[in-house]
Length: 443
Image 1: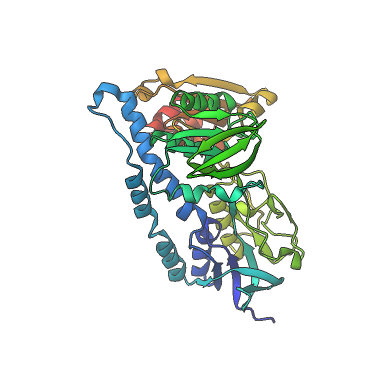
Image 2: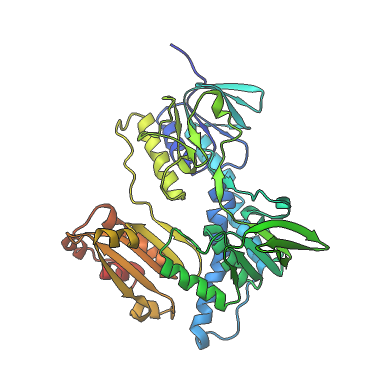
């Protein structure tokens, strides 16, 4: 029998690893984790945790603005102090996650891994490590435009480390990152221009709600340039110039390339061992197995149609823990994975989309939440939801735009996931007064 260094070896240390690797190690499985950067990966260190911390003052300022005379004086975001607070929140997370892994019995190996064969990786071109099973969880990294002067633009991590907010910012891209950071920068006083690849913003969200967000940002001074066809960036003195469209130019102090995220695969030497993948990620079966049966993949690196969000990575990591520890032999059964964009207001969704519901002939009910008493408490002026029911009356989808959309959708997830019928929903008595009660009351 072949003796390996580890029973399970993870390449990457984000949510797709640590949420399952720590409990797996506690079962007695010998676990190794290889990571070249900070333990925790993108979400705790340069993504979700940092982003929501930076957004909190935006939410407060927006609410104070709506409340009007209830508050005295004007609130203003101190961007520099906001960055300091963000750092206070995230700076200890890598150490805490390291402790969680090591206390569970897992071994952390610092360095970059490449595949030598099905059971062997080489760390930093020096150390060979073997494992019975290997899990690829290397996640995504920022995409960079392939244009002249691309090195003059910055990525999302650099934005969240800006100690001083530039006066003028150009954001290329209108997905999650582009729109969330446009909201933050605008609220903190920057002049923001968002350059679209096409004529659609947040294409994976319900477009009438997206238009409300765009219109609101427009009223606040954010400029949107559709079909911009960005061609190059130039340094002009102390400023930068964006060349786009038909010989059009735009001068700015800072450029954010928010054109998406791409799989971290190109430095793993996957071709050495014949793992199948494409530009969207690694191909896996219903057991998260690649075409090589002892090599698996989880999280954002997987090529699938799921939202590239932390809850999906968490669930996949937990599934592999159960699979590797013998707690299950079944294929993965993914739950409903919700998603939200943290603009002001937020847009959140779960289950069947409005567009899909209309094709299937499902009942789509619209709720004018601006006139629902609970949303009047903080004087929300943009608040609507659509709930989708199938022929049997089961709630199968929801999308909401409001400052509390994420909490409303979270409250409704059990009904969608477990296909609760109207009678079962009627037995749920949430705390009152809360957004959960308000959401269930409409379900």
